[in-house]
Amino acid sequence: MRQLTKEHARQTELHAENISSTNRPSDLERNYEHFCAYQRLDFTEFLRSSRLTNSKDKWTEEYEDTYVACIIFERSYEAARSLRKAVLSTPLFGEQSEKGKITGVRVNIDKNSPIRESLKVILKETAGDANQYDVSSLVEKTLAAISEQEGKDLFACYDPKILGTEDLKKYVKECCSYTWKLVCQTSAYQIEGNRNLAQGKRFNPLRHQACSGSTPTSHDVYIHAVIWPGLLGPSSSVIRKAEVLLSDRSGS
Image (tube, rainbow, N blue to C red; front, side):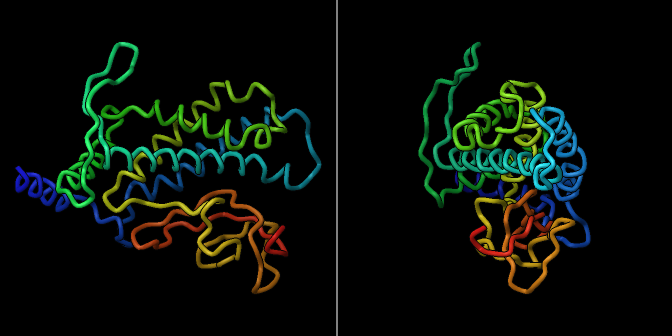
């Protein structure tokens, strides 16, 4: 059985796309650009229409809506990564009731077990087919994290009912569907956002792209906020730089 499990994982990997290829970017990498250009833009337009007041502050006018969209994307990625980790370490085998509740047996799998490698392959294969996975639990977890961790501060400038809107839920679902695919690759993609800047808040032109109107004025500048995460491939190779707003000081 163990040998068959190893063979299944090996054969599947032979047919897996080489995501480190610089000559043929994967669909996921291309779709990252597409997500920025369409889903993110649609949601920021919705946010702009949900504002309580029109501010003349440059940060609010140009960047805050995009920052909110970024935070939601980051939280959905964290939820997806957490779920993948749970599936690989303690998967649940059971049945689902009509109300959606799953009852069964949870199994502990050793980190070096060949079963774990097969699970990675299964996750990757099923993540590419929307008919084979349901992100509703990720959506709920992401919405809960946004409500608990960000609370009123993130949505202070918007309609108080925004957390219950279909537009928000739709965007969260789109984020969860995409980030689930990112984390389920056998060499999982990573993102660099507000909570995990690789070099603290120091701006690095090899990893970060300054937004228009936020051009570096010296060699020693710092990041005020990430308004869209960078996408990192195997060995933390930079596929797409993080979009950032700059600050004159590390603490501002």
